[in-house]
Length: 181
Image 1 (cartoon, rainbow, N blue to C red):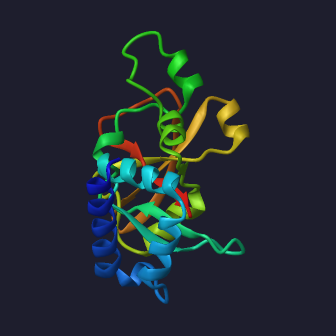
Image 2: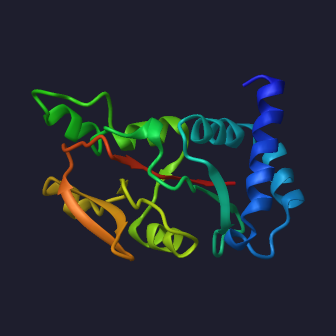
C-alpha cells in the first residue's frame, strides 16, 4: 500500500468510525489512529478487509486485553470473500466443483480471525447484518473433526447459527474478519 492509499484508507476508517459512534461508545478516533500508526501490519489487514468489501469498523475493546477490535461491518457478508468452503481440509476433500479457496486460509492470509459464535452474536447487537447472506464462523475442533462447520445469518428478526458440511460453499456465504490492534 502506497502513502496515498494509506491516507485514503485512514480517512475512510475515520469517516466510518465517526458515522457509527454507537458501535464504539466512549472511544476516540485519536486513540485508534495512534494504534494504527504504530502497527503497519494492521493497516495492511484493514486494507484487505476494505478492498474485499468488509467495511471494517471499530466494535469496541477486547475485554482484558485493551486492544481495539475491528470487525467487518458491511450489511452483507463481504462480497470479495464469498463462494469459499470452510478450510483447507474441506477444500482438499472436494473432488469436483472446487471453490477457489477456503475462508480459514483467506482470513489467515489477511491477518484476521474468523468471528466466533459469541462475537457474531455481539456484532448483531450493533446492527442487522447478513439479512440476505451468511458468514462462516470459527468452529469448535470436535465439530470440525466430524466434518461440520458453523455459519450464521439473520432472518425473521433473529440471529441463527447453523451447521453445514465444511466442504460446502455458496455464492451468498462468505466470512467476517476480526482484527485486534
